[in-house]
Image 1 (cartoon, rainbow, N blue to C red):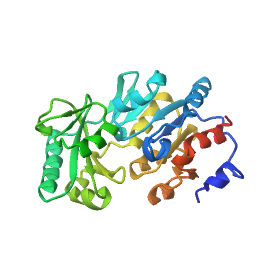
Image 2: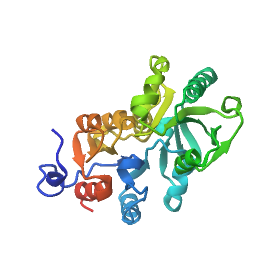
Image 3: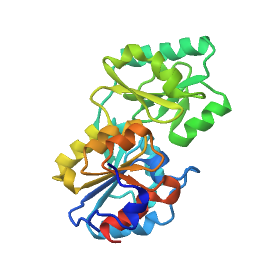
Image 4: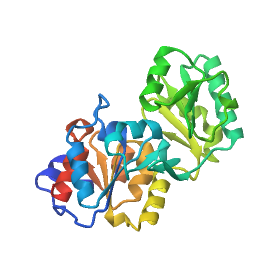
Length: 284
């Protein structure tokens, strides 16, 4: 059974600090960030100490690489960014891996979104390329959501006619993505990943693409084992990543499936659960 936040921090049977940890990977929204989308102030001195100890810290998010790089600009040198739910991995501006979608799949997903909209659904597509994200909707409510995750975005007339490598199609549903938009994408689920990545977001990617695949590739490249890896997540797009680490933590309040899949439970994102757990486990 997963540990509770109280036992993890106070009377935990876990070792106080596994000295072999070499890689810490964390989801962003609902995990590292609080509900106001803020990075805890204590992260910056902790990152300096992790670097001094030779521990690599890697954000792993559905967010765009440009967005992640901006958020960590002051410490980005040498950091590996697992962006777009694992479809695009970059270090120091150099692509380490990517998994682009076939253009016919992108067009098919966009057609599905257009049919949903024609039927009255309040949903919009974000076609995620390596250089930028592309949208057709121009209303401020939708664009405000896009700006949060995609600082490099462009409004275009037809998102299926862009000149970029598309690595993911993200759909924002103003209702419930899990109950409404995801079921409408059932025709793609047999051949591709249709992943609910948040209350309002669902992503379509290649079946081979997820945060776990990206993390395992990074582990192989760096010679780091699952036993040397600590991972934090809260939603369904984090499941495969949790499987790639022996020190896997679901946040308190995470999706029930994430809590079942993780080995341990960390305090919530609003209680700085990632920082408190790293400090507890590594003796910082």
